[in-house]
Image (cartoon, rainbow, N blue to C red; front, side, top):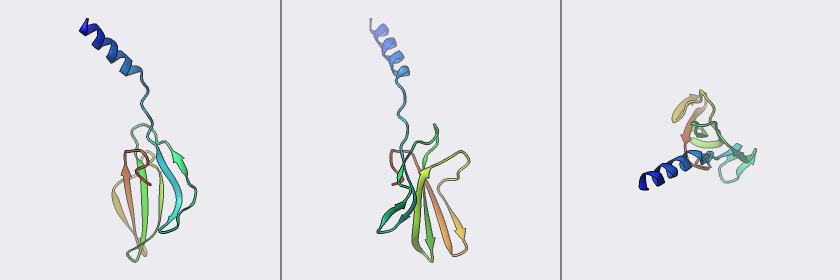
Length: 98
């Protein structure tokens, strides 16, 4: 009886759809003002994370962007730019890129 119950429970778990990851979308977020362009929600493809990009100019955060990562995106890196740097972070929980 216990084996039958365990087998039935296991089969039920296989049929429950996985909940999709939800990420914040913001094309232009300014410190103090918040998101000023493109506020929304996206769902990345299975296995992909949420992405958060911070743009720094002369050591001060100028603006940021939030979105769903796509195949081929690089995560958790710092890229030098002409007048500063770009920090790209990725995460895997709902709205973690807010």
